Image (tube, rainbow, N blue to C red; front, side):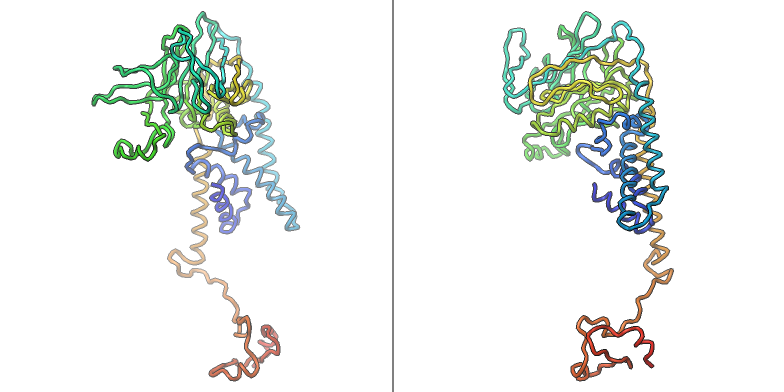
Length: 472
């Protein structure tokens, strides 16, 4: 991806004479928007700690922050290049990035207090979040927890994910699940679905006698009643789905550790009284397009919820990267994000993208936090218009490609024929082109050698231009 970006910057400089400042601003978001990745990533997510800058995401999306980063880095390049070239930097190449950066900073400083200020909570709308994170060797309850039985979480296996949300009502609902193919399914086939009290895989019988398997999150009451469910829509390639596996079943043997789930169909949110929750499973929380799709279909929700299994990556940097990417969904929607993982990092993100409570990784601990609930039913600019910055950036790159091609055609013609005369190289005698010019008796002995009336040089260097012009 970075090689493609550097190629675009060089092309813009060589063919169109564009400074890297402008090419970076347009090409960087275009490459991120267009380039396919298994786990989408944006350089804008590197600024997740700096809330004053990231607030523009509610208007431009994460790609707008990437464009701002490209603009600022282009200005830095201008300063370095001017210093190395011993020239004065172009004032407007510094003024434009500085003005836009200050504008984005001012916008964030104004929006943060407005986004965190909320009206007094209505009866039944106060939420408190509690999440337990498991570690290796932790003994966790089995579905038959009423009998007091337990089982051990063996090393890097996937313990259950369960997050409790305490409302002001008399009952404590729970959202639970096994978001990943690491656990065996329990329960039998039914006409609709069946599952244990922890969620996990659910099934739907097909007319041919088989069953579709779903990766499901369940909303249950304190007594175990299922209040709602969500089936994962965006399945992980080669982890939860294998392309063409239904057409060529033998492909499954090539990936023995991969599961084959069925993509969910429902876009409805989970409902708890007057509250609504927008659910995502695993890496769906780093897909802004999916969150927008769920938002537009089910309407604005009160809170975002994500269940994630990051145990596959062990005690590495991936859980923190995953959390940083997911935190921008809170800014894009201006809703709090409850993120519950089995081995960390579980976190609570407020509507401005700040991580207000979090767990560690692979440590047994309990995280508790108050959840800001927004029931206004409004949507941000980004949730209404989507990745308009990405489309504009791709359009800008396309225009640049067309302009570069036309600039080339004006010189060499569309079919390779010359339209404008190319600068010709000066006529150079043989002695100038040869790395070891022949002179003296050896040169005189060569048959057919012609010197075109040019004087011979006594040394091996080329004949000077003064000698050339004075020769008759």
